[in-house]
Amino acid sequence: MIKNRVLVLGGNGFIGRNICEYFAKKNWLVTSFDLVKPDNAADGVEYIEGDFFDDKQLEAVIANQDVIIHSISTVTPGNSTVKFMHGYEKDLVQTAKLCEMLVGTNTKMIFLSSGGTVYGNQEIQPIPEEAQTVPINHYGCIKICIENIIRTFNIQFHTNFIIARIANPFGPGQDYKKGVGFVDAALKKALTGDEIQIWGDGNTIRDYIYISDVCAMIYALVGYHGDSSTFNISSGTGKSQNEIIDMLKAQGLDFTVKYENARSVDVKKMILDNSKIKQVYTEPLVSFEDGIKAYCDFLKNK
Image (cartoon, rainbow, N blue to C red; front, side):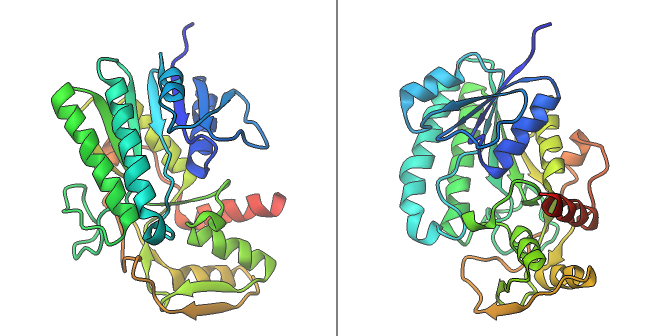
């Protein structure tokens, strides 16, 4: 039996590693491509160390792949104010090169964009994919620039590229110290009794989605053959930071909270309309409460 092949660019990151493990459990031939190999290798995953920005290495690793998951970003929402040129000069340009390399192949590419930043501040919530994108930070702007390149290749060269705008994922493997992940930071600090830092008054609302649902939705998009090229990957519901704090306290966790001045890079409210992806992935989603419990149990066991 011939197995399908999937390459995860950035397979050692939070989302990339979880996607690798998910596809491996589905009996795919999985290759993870990243600068370094993980400390603990996942079963059924081949790890290749390499540089995404090395054209020859990239051309070699993408050859003969059925699906490519593009999960590489050198900037985060937190550091994009100072590192934004790296994103424009490196991420944007190299992704355009990747698209060109795939012209004329049958390879499907799914680009992991940022549903949490590309839309900016929006009045209508939940936000549909058709909403005008008005990002308020360079991280979101870089993602939109890459999205536009992808759409242009789809139109001009009939490539098979999909854009997955992921909301705010959380779960095993996340590390808030890399610049994103309020749930991850709050839960880990609550478990150790450390102080939780909140930028603003705590009423910032985000669409949090458990990582297993992200992987399942991405996997479902592999088999999608419709006309849409952009999908929100989200729970379709929102939670404020204060609600999350109250939830953790209700579990008997003892910690303190410190409120800092709000940051200009953060949108006030972000809930994404997930009706389109739910037509592709029809299974029930993990509730926020169940996701918190599952992740808390995972951290305690670890």
